[in-house]
Structure formats: structure tokens, C-alpha cells
Length: 321
Image (cartoon, rainbow, N blue to C red; front, side, top):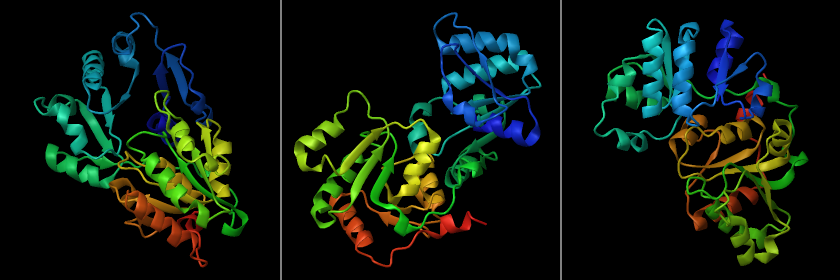
């Protein structure tokens, strides 16, 4: 959130801001100097209603309205904005989620209502841009999520890192396939006694993935580490830099920013064969592909860990120049 307005401020000198309720904290904006926050009054307690009321009063001073996803919410916000500022431009941004998953809701609703109001429509993956361009008969551009060059630290060699397999994300969800990763590590743990598995990310309240795993494998408590969500970017970058291997077993992804960050920080990456991984690794020219099955993931790890000639990926080398 905020990448597009921040980029417009940084590179094109726009007076950019994001909107939110007064009681919402946005700690990540501390890394985007110049990007302001304007608070929307909480009148009705419903964000859609309050944001549209705010747009009625402020539309004329907004040159570009950045909205996300082809949803009823975005249509109403765009209609409100264009009604009060006909010359204003709407920029609709999609993530990189596989397109077939996005079309179910729109089976009987024409997306041209929204698209006709949009000056620019973008998505995070080239494959999705091509699919949407063909489907909607208009140009959809690809705008990948950027990396922050300021976060690239001094190169850390493989031998200087700890024997850690790292994964980062929302743990325990079907999307992230955390259970597959945990089972694979448990099954090879006795063969790699000096290695640990670190899982950085929030676990939803109704999920007991950590408790369930340790109940099944109580001897893994010292070797499998759940860090919870890490808000501090410096701390997270150091965890990447200290890990030798990054595991990305997702069943699907929107873009895969964690994979990008791991590559930027020199981890050897093992990733599932999904569109975002294929795009970010140039069809696995800079990562090892895995299948999302416990026994196959176990074999992949054994192959990687037993390869004494294992080197860091070329992606990280190239970022030094």
C-alpha cells in the first residue's frame, strides 16, 4: 500500500498521500518520506461510505486516484470521484494473483463499467497483463512491486551465514503451504542435525499450526523457530542475510515479495512452480523449483543441503553493480 503514490511523489514530484481512519496506524510509511496521510472522518463506521463522502468534498483537488482491484468498492469510489472531478484520472492496480481466481465474482457483471473510467490499469505480473489485455481488449501494463535499493546491505557470503532454512509470510494458510514445509523438515531433521527451520510471520488466531506441529514432533522445539510477524524492516533484512536457504512453497501468490527480498539478500531459493516464482526467477534460472508435496520437498532439501558446491544465486551478485 502506498507504492504507487510514493513513486509519483519521488520521481514526478506529486503531492501524494494515502487515506485512512484517524485511529489506523501506518508504521510502514516511515520508510516512504514525503508520502503523507490524510485522515477520513469516521462518520458511519463503514469505510466505503465514509471514503465516498470524503471523495465528494475532496475530488477536485485530486489529479490521480489510485484504487485497487476490480471490486464493487472500487467502482463506487471511482464513480464518486469522476462525478465530482470529470477530468481526474483513475489508476486501477491489480496484484499478481492468478486471473481465473478473480473472475468468478464477475461472471454476470460487466467490468467495462470500471474500466471505462480508468486511465491506467496495471498488474504485477506480465502473464496477467497479457491475459487481461486479451480479455478486455485494452492495454494492461505490468508494474512489478519494486525493491528498496536502500535495503541492500553489504554482501554476506554463504559460509558466513547460519544453517537456517527460512520462510516468510502468513503462516498456516492454505496459500502458504506451511504444513508441507514443516513436515518435510521434520522428516529429514535427523540427517541434517546442524540445521534449523525459521518461520517469520503472523499465525492467525484460529490456527494452531505451531502447537499441532510441536505436539506431533516435540523434539523439534529447539530447531523449528516461529518468530511471529516482524514489523521492523532492519530486523527482517538481517534474518534474510543470516539464512542460507529460503523456502517458498506457496500454492499460489499475488507477487511474491518475500521471494524477491530473499533473492536480494543472497539466499539460495527453493520455490514452487507458480506464475510469480517463474516470473521473478526468469523461469527458475536463479532458483530451484520444487513440487508442493512433502516427500518431494524433503528430497529437494536433501539435494540442496548435501551439495557441497552450493553457491549463492547470481541475482544477488548482480545487485551489487
